[in-house]
Amino acid sequence: MKRRNFLATAGTVGIATTVAGGTVVSSAYSSINATVLLQEFQPEVKAVYENFSSQVQVNKEDMGLDNDHAASIVLPTRIISQKPSNIVYKNRSGQYVTLSVANGKERIRISNSL
Image (cartoon, rainbow, N blue to C red):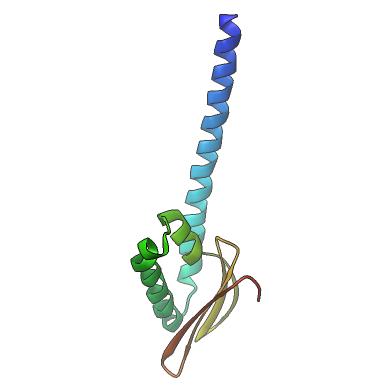
């Protein structure tokens, strides 16, 4: 009887460790992927992105966001389209983020569809 309990506990701990390890690997992959995608941003759009990122970080407490949720709003997972003064990317939350510069004005748009 004691051996069965030990094996059941060991199996549960093994599964939990595997899931936690997978989450860490997935998070690390997302960070690497986001870094690679950010290198593709044009300088004008990169300035808009940095402004957007800083606004979310400053206001995350006011909006009731934790670090992971704030990162999922800001970090790109896939670039949909890119022009010198406009970029559309999909964030980790599955939303589409459009960053653009027109006549010196920065525009940020977040939507669930294109």
